[in-house]
Amino acid sequence: MTNQPNSGQLPASFRDPSGFLFSHSGVLYRQVNHAYEREYARLLESGLYEKLVKAGLLIPHVELDPSSAESEAAFKVIQPERVAFISYPYEWSFSQLKDAALATLSIQRRALKLGMSLKDASAYNIQFVRGKATLIDTLSFEIYNEGQPWVAYRQFCQHFLAPLALMALKDVRLNQLLRVYIDGVPLDLASELLPAKTRLNFGLLTHIHLHAGAQKKYSGQEVKSRSGKMSKQAMLGLIDNLEATIKKLSWTPQGTEWGNYYDITNYSEAAFEHKKELVREWANRVKPSLTWDLGANNGVFSRVVSETGSYVVSFDVDPAAIEQNYQKMKSGKTGNLLPLLLDLTNPSPSIGWANLERESFGARGPADMVLALAVIHHLAISNNVPLPQLADFFAQTGRWLVIEFVPKQDSQVKKLLASREDIFPNYTKQGFESAFKEKFIVHAAVNVRESERALYLMQAK
Amino acid sequence: MHFAPLPYLDPGSGSFLIQLLIAALLGVAVAVRASWGKIKSWFGIKPKADEDDDESAE
Image (cartoon, rainbow over all chains, first blue to last red; front, side):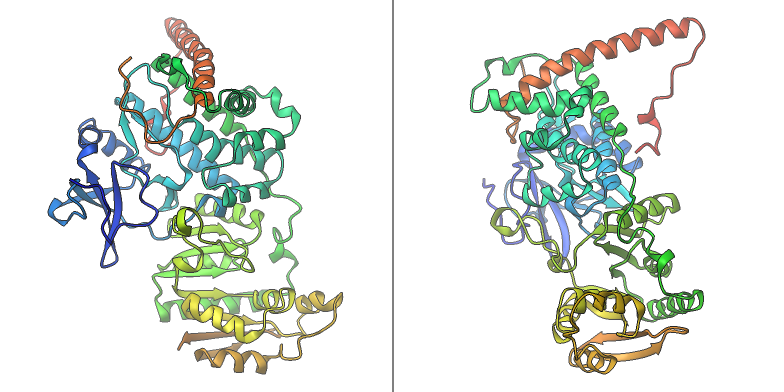
């Protein structure tokens, strides 16, 4: 018998001996190893699987013929429902991370009731499926023996509690620490960065500050009392307290750059409506299954596309815009829209072991259609990217492109140039068209009503 | 103790000990709440619905 992976095994799926993900002809499967036979059986027989799937907390799967397995260690092969777009915690808004944390605790509580427990609490095991934070790792459960503590406690604090506390109580941008620390924010760092007053909060005092102290004190020591007992009641108390601590954390966007962008825009109502009309018409024509809206703000145009049936990932650099977009998505129950944080001038890199565990922004593409509305001047002027390089980038990112050209006469561009030298002689409509025609076939070009701007529908060559 | 096989992720010695300590405290709180619920039920006050059985719980 061997646990050795074959060629189809996904590079991010190596840590857990219970099984792994592999792909065949673009379809994703999960091999369940013999080592996990008992746990898998318990998950299904106890009714936990059904309960969690019904609540939208666990990804549903179908069992396949085990002869399709990747290695001899296989006990079963399952095919989980495909997740439309894989996202990572450093791309989530505050409330997205909070909902992922609360989903994890809710799963743990339900599991305990049915004699199981989560053996890991990684934020990377949660994805947004139909708009809801959902556990995608079916093999995350172990059989619970009363007395046993929660093995994933440290991981939960690092992946969820520490970044949420930092975002809520220090600075929302500290979620970017997750991009550096793949196993969550080190608790000693969180403890150092959090304001002193957080020591007055019982949950933060114990789960972060004292926890960090205990880690330091006992680091590298073998703890004999590892066999120390923890009653089920104590375990439930711990889960309840983590939940209450997290529920109390909140972040309200204010005073940010783009939060009220649409209220201060130079657009007339007619221009705005015309833009919507064109985007809707072109989305219906292209019929993309996956659309990326780059520079989506709070997602007005993402919604126009999602209404045509496409799954839309709505990227923006502003945490406030993403937060607003997510709240709107939740209240509108738009399951096919995913707001994510992304700095286009420095998009998510590939990180982790061998740089293969978490995919870069580009590796998760190309999308069927890309929207780049009111964004080109930020890339070409604020970030000095030459137009031919922008054309290259967009041609790699999507098969179809809906792009808006914002000329120098536009008040938004004037603002960008107000305090600096105009070193962009080629930034003209003609310069834009000739650069993009190198990489794209232009299917439509329309001047936006009552504005200086133009919208294009292009197909990558 | 008959614990499950050793975890595949290291729970960390310090994390393990502090967890036992915190959980011991919080377990008492759960017990108190449970008996308080019982006392209230003698007076006909119904306990809050268990939100984990609510399918829309998040």
